[in-house]
Structure formats: structure tokens, C-alpha cells
Length: 364
Ligand SMILES: Nc1nc2c(ncn2[C@@H]2O[C@H](COP(=O)(O)OP(=O)(O)OP(=O)(O)O)[C@@H](O)[C@H]2O)c(=O)[nH]1
Image (cartoon, rainbow, N blue to C red; front, side, top):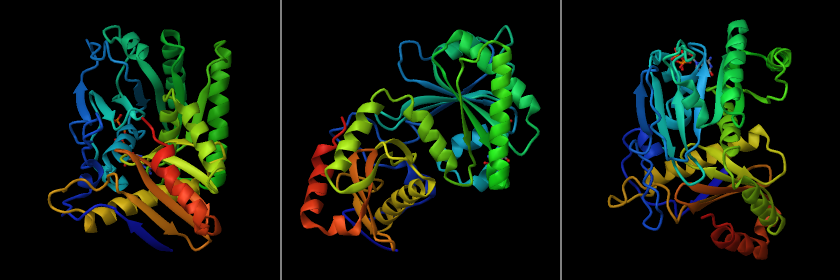
């Protein structure tokens, strides 16, 4: 694989991996603050007497629930704090609800609430109605390497209670830690969990509740892909974005286009052709390469901590005649495209693509 990257900013000393993830630039004409720990506003509270800190705010809430040690905190740390998967081995059990504000852009803007596995949120002193009322998505994490009978009954209880309070919640089930399973075992687990969970709902007369199942692991890109899908459902502009990307690819010889949040590597939209895991992984790798190269060679001292800016773009020629093209769209968003070499080399098309990348797919 050969790669070329232009304009990926100037060099600065990078102290640690977290700097890469959170030290992005502050754009004057953008209202959003730099994505720092300040924006990843984290706070933990006891379950009892929990008041609604969000009254008046419209940010959707994503709840992470599931039994102890199922992997909830690891998911949050890996996706939003760039923690390496191996480091999660040392995470302590969560004993309070941890709230985190994720405000990367107008599209990726929500709160994540990580619940301790052992919490009894149906305790009468615990205001679960308040929690479910403002919830956009409830992610229930099941440890696939463990016996999941208890997890399924907990899932049923959680979903039925939550649905009664707020039928608009998206119920997302992460069949997690699948890295230890063969492909056949993964499919079998998913089929079994799907059947048992839906049978339980049908027995309760609640077959109208829809559960979306995902096979996830923090040791590969599956967790980012699953989180992308959860977040996409909370973006009201998604159909418009998809439509824009469809128009864009139909006019430019591009085969596949993604709009990425570069900080979390969540893709917030793509055109309507199917997404395969390998394509998604390539996009994530390309974002990493751009940010790494920019940090190492791109930043001057004055611009320290701004590895992604208006000038950021990169072209990577893969060895299978495919070209990958990345271009900054807004402060935290990147357009990542795949096209054939011959389309890329056609000068007219290349110019058209550039103009489109610069102007057409502007997202406010
Ligand atoms: N193999 C594997 N292990 C994982 C994965 N995700 C998390 N783990 C491990 O699972 C263990 C528990 O993870 P936590 O994130 O602390 O689990 P939790 O659900 O937050 O636990 P509580 O805070 O007790 O509710 C850790 O040792 C993680 O390293 C995964 O995808 N695969």
C-alpha cells in the first residue's frame, strides 16, 4: 500500500495517545468547543435520589446497562477515551452511575450513562422513570463468554420497564466479547439470544418491542461499527445526509462515501449501498494515519494540538486499484471515499470530486 497525504497540518510533540484523540483544533467559525476532557464531561453519582440534571436540555441520552463485568465501562473507554483494549483488564467495577457528555459536533452530541452492573434501579428510592424518560437509546450488554440466562432475564425486565415509561427508546443489545468465539459460534449465539429474548417479550404480550442485536468486541472494529449504528438512529438529519451522499457519489465516480466523526471514529452517515466491515476498518485506519502523520510531521509549535484542520486531506492508493480519499468537512467531520484508480485519474472527475469535497457536501 502506498500513501500520500497533503496538508495534514504541522508538527508538534505528541505526549501520549490521549492527546491525539482529544487535542483537536478549535475552529474560530465553529461554535463547538475543542474536544477536550472538558467536553468529555464525566461525573458519577449514586443511584438513590438521582435528580434530572438535564431538564431543559435536548441532548439524547444513551444508557449502558447489563450485568457486572459484562464490559460496559470498557466499551465507553475504548470508543470515547481511546483506551487500548488491554488496559480495560485493569478497570475497577463501576459503583456509581457515570455520566459523560460527548459533544463533538451537532450530529455527535449526546450523554452516555454507564450503570454499575449491580445497581438495583428498580429500588423504590431510585427514580428510573426520570432516567428512561430522557433516553434515546438503551444499550444492554451481554457477555457472550458467560452463561447468559441471568442476563436475558435482566434484559427482559429492563426493556419492559423502560418501554412502559418511554416507548420511543431504541433497544440495542450488544452480544459482547465475541472475540473468543468462532464465526459459527457467533451466529449461533446471536440466533439463540434473539429467539429467547423475543420469546420472552411475546410471552409478555410485548412483541411490538424491537430489539436490535450486534456482535461486538473491543478487540476489533465491531464495537465502533455497532456504536455508529446506535448513534445514527439518534440523528434526525440522517435521511438527508444519506441522500446527499447518494447524490454526491452518483455525480463523481465515487463508489462509497462515509461521513466520519474523526474523534470517535463513529460514522454518522453513508450512502445507501451496503457497508462491509473491511471497508469500515480501512476508513478507521486511514483516519488514524492522517492524525498520526499530522501529529508527527504536520504541526508547528504555535498550532500544537491541532492535527486536524481545514487543510486536512489524504489520498491512499491501495494495491487493488482502489483509491481512498479523505477530506475535512467540518471541525470534527471527515468525508472518506472509495473510488477506482481510473475514475480518480480522470482529470475532470478528480476536479469535480475536489470541488464537491470542498463545497457541495457542506454540513452545517
Ligand atoms: N475478551 C473480551 N473481554 C472484554 C471485552 N470488553 C470488556 N472485556 C473485559 O471484561 C472485564 C469487565 O469489563 P468492565 O468494562 O469493567 O465491565 P462492566 O460491565 O463495566 O462492569 P461493572 O462496572 O462491574 O458493571 C474487563 O476485564 C475487560 O477487559 C471484550 O470485548 N472482549
